[in-house]
Length: 365
Image 1: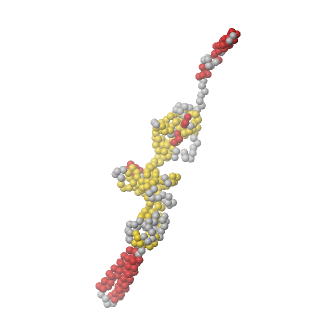
Image 2 (image 1 turned 90 degrees about the horizontal axis):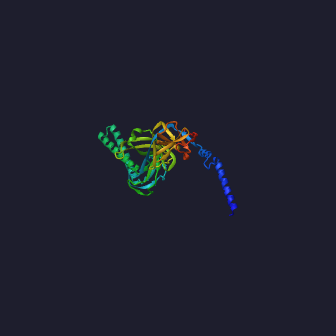
């Protein structure tokens, strides 16, 4: 590099240095006064837009949840009282029958022959007694003879009644109206006393048995309403009523047995089904509630963000029951307090917010 080029470079560097020194007040990256002012004037973040809802009062039912078991209103295993061969089966599996419907006819041929003999003996005894009465009226027969014939007549009548009773045991009928279960025998089968023929259940009404801790005895009484749900019908709620409270408390579990009833005309509920029971024992007419959307669960406990003077304020609360999208507030909030329900993801404690009221819904009202 020649001396002329070197001299030119030196002149350029000197000119740049003089310019920087002369205009340093106008160059913020050098550190002049105006630069410091601009550095301190950082752009402010606009307030976070949020939706708020007011803490309010509403009627809140006090409910107890229990595990229940469905039972038929009436239930029986159809068996035979006597030994006999089945001549006729007059029912189908799953059939709905009325009380008194003939289900099974056993072979009663021999009994009917005995009944015919007994009826013949009765008819003869009746004739002898009637003739004796006429003779006694004319004093042609002794009173003792008339009494003897009367006793013989009564004995034959008793024999007829006994034969008819035995015959009735060979006819198995429905003891009440209901739905029959599976058929366990066939025509021609020889059944013995106690052999299962089928089952019969009255399911127009379902009994629901459940247990409650003894501490709730004073809150439960016959006529109290409850709802029941089954895993088989997740979208269906069955309404029932308490009928009976056990007279005893289980000394081991300290629980009392409750029996209620649920209408079941459509036959959806079956005996033995598991039911979740919600029993409403009282209603708090002015419970303090907050929207569940506002509640944030933390390790330290539930919190909400209140809006106070345009800023978000982190507020620990204590909650109780939950119903229809609301949580009961036991401590930490007052009626009318505004809490954030939307926009919580970017909200920080003490940060400015721009609040808008939530649109009321029918459920909230």
